[in-house]
Image (tube, rainbow, N blue to C red):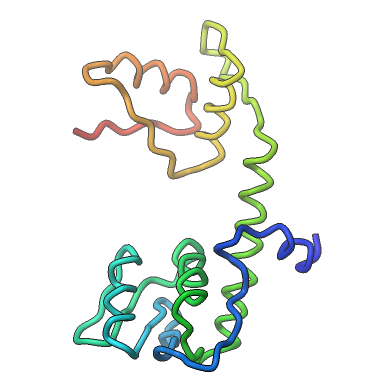
Length: 172
């Protein structure tokens, strides 16, 4: 898929921000590439700290947050509302392209759900929505499954269902 095709199908929050005349500060990427940093208008930095999970930053006018695809998608949305001068345009473009490809891949997966069959150890029949849920769990490594209170049998059944591919953890 060409990048133009991907950009045409992007959700609104990932539309490339249009440079504005007025900016509220500077966006730069840390030298080691692990963090994006907003420096500028204190209100904009405070807003960024509230919006981005795991953000850091000491003092007024500084917000620092992890450089990952999820955060970067939120950053693009943020730039649509509060334009910032981009200090590292090449780093920004690289992360933008990577995030667009990632979101397009996730949209394709979500648009065409797969129905997975359980391991042979499982005795029973799954309904189509259960097969979809099983496929989702096996495709998305960080899936959170919630159980009804006191229903530990659900967890053990799901563990049998997914077999040795992944084990569900018990957390209080």
